[in-house]
Image (cartoon, rainbow, N blue to C red; front, side, top):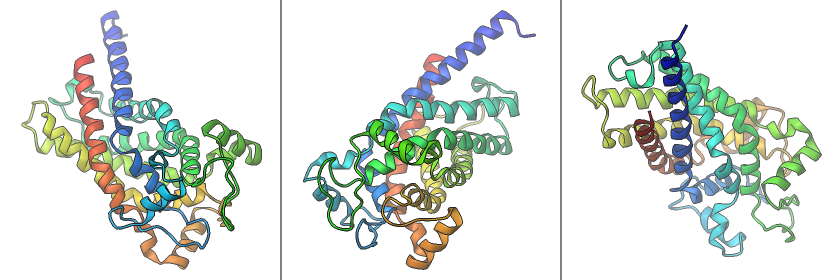
Length: 313
């Protein structure tokens, strides 16, 4: 049986993990919310002719179209960000909490002992896969509402142009209520299978890349420095999004299923229709923007997480 001191130490470690995860999660959204809105619109169909946005923000009309359709308001880039901002602590607590506890179960090594006795790559990969699965289940309704709001290019109450979707949402709560009223509880989990297929292998690569780079760039037995954490975190984020982008395209289209006049009968059907209409290159849509976004976001996330964890634990 664990002693009282061991219980208090374990409780303090869990509290530290939760607080570090919260602050690291919030830091994810500060640098690049405009990219997120453009990415979501770029991976889905245009509303009228079925054409698609270019994946590269530097040469794409998508950002300027987003501004124009939002009434020349810069806030058009920030569509759908209020809900993720409010829920990011929960999502990241699930992600990092599931990873840390799974790694603790597999390796029987606490966080502060992992530099002297690092876990095996197999354990990191397995714990990362588990955390991705848990995140996908919790994230599904939140991500669905975010994608629906970001793909609504006209303000609530304004008449949509001919051929465009007539569905209008006042905000996250109204969006969730509308989906629930029309499609039931399962409607809030539209695209969940694609999200699971995206996040389960992606989070495994995410944590595996971060751990391996930190170990390779740090003297054995020592803590990685801030620059090491930044580089490893940024590379981990970029690698994970390279893997995630093809299924992210499918996920976004399934989440907009029926809203823009296109219906799919599952993940495989969405893949088949997308490839038939646009070719294999459809899976690269948004890749450049995802990589541009991923490096700074995940560099800051891991640096915040590691720094706060050291201060608290």
